[in-house]
Length: 457
Image (cartoon, rainbow, N blue to C red):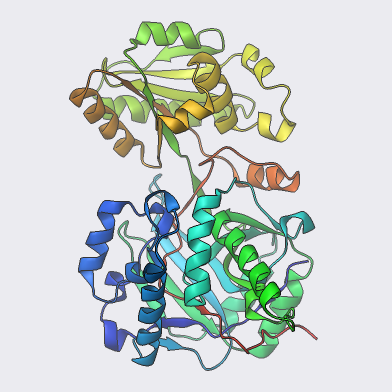
C-alpha cells in the first residue's frame, strides 16, 4: 500500500559549519521562544534560522519572513554550506539513548520519501487532531522554500525486522552525520545507495500501512501543498516531488522504540485543598496516599506504584496526583463507576488513560470543559515528571489565585496507537510522546521543479 522512494538528501557540510551538535535542533513544535535565541547563538548556521519562522500561535506572518528563509537556504546551497547528494539514496537513522528506566537502548529507522495519500485512503493513518493555524504557517514556509526541513516520524509493522536487516547490511561504513543532543542521545545517519536493496525495500512496503507518530501538521501541510501544485501545473504527475513527503519510518516492533507519558499540570481556577479534591474524585477513584519522603520521593513512589499495578493487571487504570500547596501525593485507582461515564465512546478510546483523565477527572470531577481549558490556558504538558513538579511548586509559591495540580500518567502503548488509527479515531491532544525526538537538520529534502521521483516499474 505504501510507496517509498530514495532521494538526494541535503545535509550540512561540516567543513563549513563545524560541529553538527551546534547546528541541528529538535523539531520546531517542541522549541519554546526562550530557546530560539539560545540555538541562534550557538552557531550562525543553526537550523533554527531555517525551520523556526512561525509567529506565536502559528499564525501566518509577513511575506518577507518566509522569503528571507528561502533566500538563506539558497545562499547556503550556493556556498556549499549545504550539500545535496548526487545520487538518490535511502538513509538509516539510528539513535542510542538512555531510557528513564536507566536502560541503554538503540532505535533504528529508515529515512525515505513517501508517496502522499489522503487519510481516507487508509495508507497513511493519523491518530491526532490538527489545527489550521499551524498548517497555514508551515504551508507558507514549504511553498516559499521548496524544502522539507524535518522528517515526519511514522511507524510500520515488520515483525521479522526484514527492512532494517537489509539496510544494516547495505549501509555505507561511515555515517554522513552524527550528533549528541541535549539529553545525551546519539543520533547517526548512514547512506544506502545499493539499487537492488532499495528496490527490495520498496517492494516490502507495498503491502504496509504507515502510522504517523509525530508530524501530523507537517503531513497535512504536504497534502495542502500537493493540492496547490496540482492546481498550478497542468502536467502534474505522481512522480512530481510535491507528491511526496520525507519520513522517518520505524518498525513498531523495534525494541528501541519508546513512548513516554505526557503528564498534565492543571491550573485549577481558584483555591482547592486536598480534602475537597478527594471528595470530587471519590465517586470514580480509590485514593491511596503516598507517605513520607520529599516531594521527589512521593512522585517517584506513585509512578512506581502505577507501573506495578498496571503491569500486574492490564485492566487496572491508575493515575497519580500531587498537590504542591500541601505537599501530598495520591495514587488514583479507577472504580467501575468511571467506566459508565465513557461507555458511549468507541472501545478503543475507552481503553486510553488520556481519555479517562480528560473525560472523568478533568471534565466530570473537576467540572472544566475543553473550551475553558483552551481559552484560559489551564493545562500544560510535560514528559518529565520532575520538571512538571518543579513548575507546580513554583506556580503555587508565586500566586494565590489558582491551585496547580499535577496529574502523572502511564504512557500510551504503541499497540493502542495502531488500534485507534485503524478505526479512523482521534486521540486527545498530547496523547503520545515518542522518545527521543527526530532531530531537525541532519537531513532534509529539496523539492526541485522539473525533477521526478523514481517509481517502481
